[in-house]
Amino acid sequence: MKPVSIGLLGLGTVGQGVANILLRNSAEIERRTGRPIRVTRAAVRNQAKAEALALDIDITTDADSIVSDPDIDIVCEAMGGEEPALQLLHKAIANGKHVVTANKALIAVHGNELLEAARDSNVSVSYESAVAGGIPIIKALREGLAANRIQWLAGIINGTGNFILSEMAEKGRSFADVLAEAQALGYAEADPTFDVEGIDAAHKLAIMASVAFGMPLQFDAVYTEGISHVTREDVEFADELGYRIKHLGLARKRQDGVELRVHPTLIPEKRLLANVNGVMNAVLVHGDAVGPTLYYGAGAGSEPTGSAMVADIIDAVRCLHAEPAHRVPMLAFQDDALSSHVMLDTPDYLSAYYLRLHALDQPGVLATVTDIFGKLGISIEAIMQKEPAMADSGEAADESGEVPIVPIILLTRRVREGLIEQAIDRIQALTTITQPVTRIRVESL
Ligand code: HSE
Image (cartoon, rainbow, N blue to C red; front, side, top):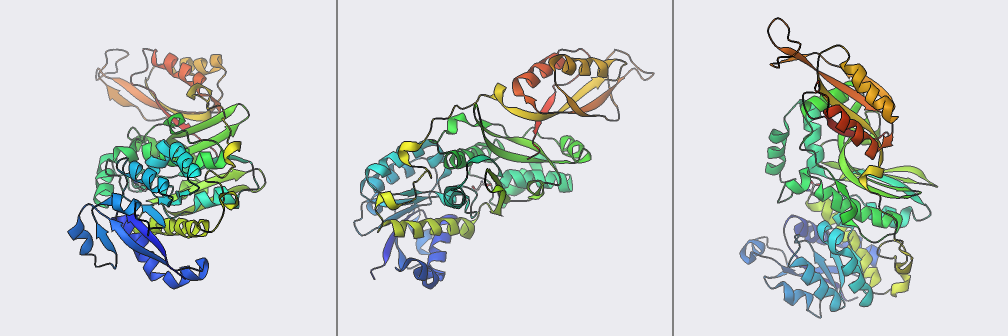
């Protein structure tokens, strides 16, 4: 049978992974598809560098010529970035080609328009490799869990951020030191703020939430907080309380709307997710029928990401022969059945909290703080006062002329975020509180 012809856009780390897997496993893959698959052409920025790889692929710097080539059946985008990737995919779709992409930003931000264009052209857009690297989480959400009403999912979906937090917790290293190593090892995005400020995780969460809850992609609705303010002190205090701090993406469907949020989170140390370390990713999904299910694996890298892309290519090969009505819908639910859930705003989020305060060590300070919580109806789960440090304020000075300052750690029970903000404002207004209050959410999962 005539081989299926793949045009690759980008032959970097991920593109090479795809080319290598398709070559090495060609016989096994053909047993699955019934047709051979060949990467026939690849578009690159640096022709000489790509030719030095000595792959049996026609190399060009003219990406347009690939998306317009009538001999290409499936376009596989592994170039990253917004443009020219977006325009090229639109052209490929308009030319009737199925598209496979690893571009999470493109799907999260421009996915609705791309999918709309694909429906109009009767082709598919596949994006398994855009989320959690080699973990087949889109397949699991879209097909394996199709019997369920998915209630929530929570994931460690940025390897760089997880590497940083793991090294801080295990080896007591500083944030800046570990980030520099993550960059040197090539885990981080070209712009590492995408990793540490949570934007990369927010892209992935927006995609998973759409597929889980059957709604259009809503990247703008994701509350995003990074890990750059997490200190070694917090990591150690959390450890003493029996928690690990992880950078979590969380999507929860409630009666009154949907919460989409990415932020550092204290997780009980006994949870499997709390023990996912280094650059590994994991996603916990809760369905009403199946209960909790956990997916774990490499969240980045050449062949793990290539594995997900090749699986999408194999599905796309099947789409070549299947009428659109017989394909799995691109966002898991029928296009006319996508729902416009209410997106909840941060004051309505529900979470428990870890708060770190620094207070002058004077009688009555703790009582004033707990009184604020009592008056707002916020229940305290645990409270921990640490050894004092000295500050050179004039008040209540000891013999050395310095006032001791004590770190106070509080864990609250689950509460509306609007209420905890009020409590923090009132605590910060106290003259006995010497530094801004640190707030980290706690999820028991
Ligand atoms: N920078 C990303 C990460 C790469 O660290 O997870 C994979 O999306």
